[in-house]
Length: 185
Length: 197
Image (cartoon, rainbow over all chains, first blue to last red; front, side, top):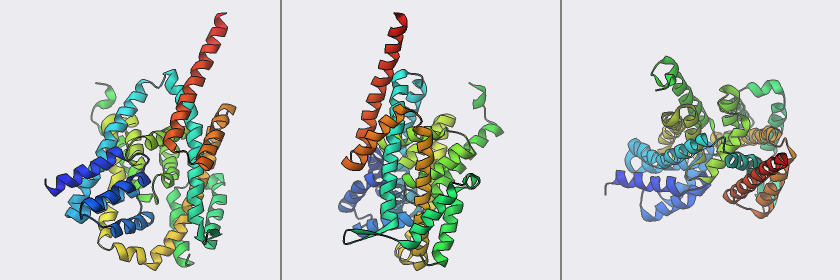
């Protein structure tokens, strides 16, 4: 089988089985390092670090990177397409179903409880992400990273001002980059 | 054929908007699914009014419980809602393009990008802001979602299950869905029965 087809199929498989987003793709991405020499385990570790510092979801970045390593830019396009196609098909089917049944009382009932439940899940996940991002862990003790923590608190406080909420969130990211470099975060 | 389906300037514009909105979301999200929420809220709810804020939670639930990356699932879902299958594809293309370009550019110099001191300083700043944005989104979403006693009564057990017992999202969503169906239908039937008598 040609490499192009293989890259396409392997990433399509990941797109088809990884339930739960970025972190869920990791085990499958690791598996690929054992099966093929497209990228190494070290590449994957680096990629996780890079994914944090470049825009875009990890799974997507990893697919692009693996494809790029094997066949250059074209490979990146192929692997991304493989990853994305199952999502497009599945989600279009679900969206069509929900469109037809959005008046259905079972569907309405289900989503009336799903919304607050998902809010709770998001709140817990955000808490966990913030804990890892704003604190450094040494010997089991969490200590706040001073500058990052301070920036977080100040920006959060500013976001409570109605007038400031109309700006694109990217403005805050730009401010963060500038402050981070100038004040050596 | 419905009138909206004829090719024309107005029709193309919505595709272009979909592409650009998700291009920005994909290009400005640092850290995957959760970090994307503030961007989604801004572009889809505040700017284009394509969705109501609580609908973001529906999409997140669907994204978490179906295979594939949440970012892609979200793009497809919103695109489909606006313009059917083509809309889904266009929105997804917008989401994917920044990753494709950026990763291709940094792939050659991966290690030097990570080790770069400036990049590291910038990342520590970005982290702080991303946390603030996410916390703010949780707050505003909570205000809109937890308006009834019913909603609070669902959210609290879900919070406990996720926080203390690490119950997975899929399980919580399924339990909530079943509970919601039973509650909603039982309440409805109960009222109907009451009226009939």
